[in-house]
Length: 134
Image (cartoon, rainbow, N blue to C red; front, side, top):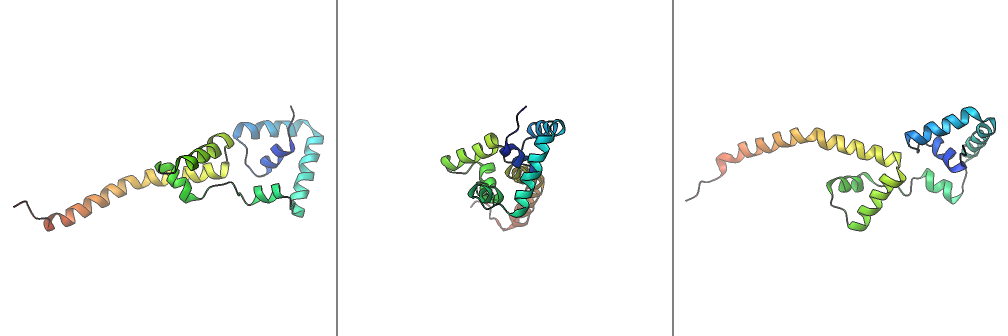
């Protein structure tokens, strides 16, 4: 089983899917050369690799803001941005953005009963202010 340098970097950043992570861990257990490659990659990171790719990954330049993820969840993004967000989440499988999306979904589901209760209180408090039809 071949593990690429990019997969090792993803493993270090916890950016791989569960299946890929398990596959990399299995390969690391079986290969001293791969473990040495992982250690070298860790040393490079500790020195502060300054390549464009390293900075891009470290700063998560392709990741989405919580506002964008929230808009995606509500289905109100422009079609092009919606397509990019879907690609980033479903194809790339960015663990950082998937975690943010899961958190937003949990907040949305947890807020539903509170929102309904707040609306009911607003209605009840203003019901006496509404005039009946003439």
